[in-house]
Image (cartoon, rainbow, N blue to C red):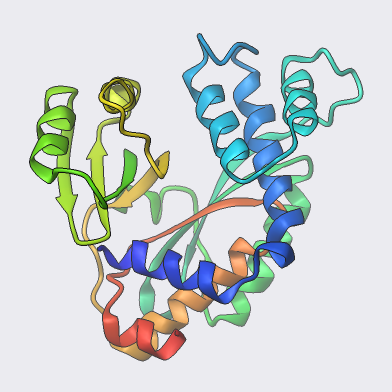
Length: 248
């Protein structure tokens, strides 16, 4: 399992579902609103279908999902106008951090992000100063239990995957964004439902830091993810077992 996946597992263990439920639903709602701008039918809008499936898997009520779709398509005239933005920052020990937000107030978002980054002994970066170190990738994670890694590799590779990384607990698939839909479709056709699937920014090269510095970066990521406007945080640090031990 990659360090990223191990860290996510630890986060899920540390945080109770009830405590995070409200914030999670807020993020899921915004995902659906933004995706629905390109069309309100999940049959023809793959991004919307993924957003809805993610919401359903998190037990988001059907009424909430439908209301979010209406806001995104403009059917709900009371819908708030959200926009997507990516902010760049240098974290502890020169690490690179990208912060994706869906917000109705950019000034509020950047102010909150700057506050958290500064407290972590980091600083905001100019546009392009950090993002060049990342590439947008399709990411799909499968629960490994009961799956044949060779079969998954064959399915994913035939559908356009660049890399398949199996481990005891999870099988991770990476691909160019344009192959995202075809890979998910191939897996679902074979009866394999992804546990996680998204487009995200992957570091071109991971930075290896000492355990204390790595733990400081992960704490920064965790605090950024707690902000209401933040949807995703990406970082270029290799997550070691020693660093995770400090946080577990």
